[in-house]
Image 1 (cartoon, rainbow, N blue to C red):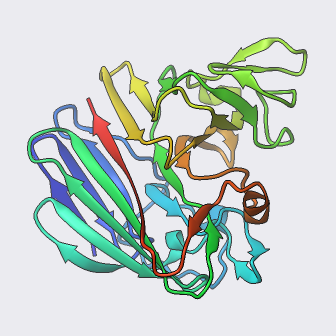
Image 2: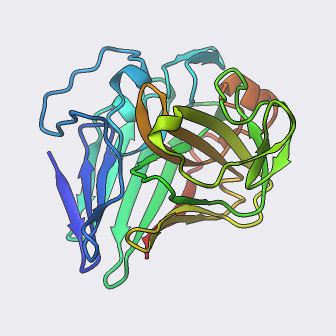
Image 3: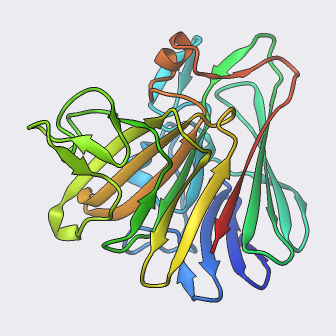
Length: 299
């Protein structure tokens, strides 16, 4: 089932049966699709995922959510699947109107009901995204929520992140950053200690890739500017709810993909047991709903 929300500016397609993801965001004025999908992707093709499926093997792009964890792990005595369970689950449509939809997932790996409400503005190119979590268990849960929009980019696109600290998630993955520790956006440090820019989409021929944590954000926003269409996609959020942005860049260097991931996140690092130990978790008290929200705009 495909559901489309549309106003005069944006068309937003949603696939409840495929992780409840936003499958595409189309700027109608510029005829620009902002979300990436891998080569050969077919939204109508059948999709059956085995329990505990590996995310990278089955990645179809679009805008997904990672919950209640990122890396597959055991945390709090629970075995949690790769990139959480939200991306691979069938979501229920709880409510729907012309410009809004509420999706609901009763999680299996944790005793949490996860709701997502998408509301398209009446007359502006804005999409309000609201998340609501209710823990029906008997004890407080440590979780994380990471947004996972795959952005379709072009060489030379400008990656817009506010003033912040940046560090490599894993130097063994990095091809741009070559040293541990923090630097200041928009630069990292290469293996020689020299500054390397991180804010421009490189050519596919570079075969570069990078994965960084952005923290101590000067503002709650991140986005990408496309010079060809003179347009920007931006996510705006409260840094009290999303203190981090994880930034994943693949210019052909990860499985041949050419894609940018802008990932506001409640937590870091990617291993949930370490998140809980560092007290950066999204804590969910029993029967006390927790809500988070952000706004996606295209201008």
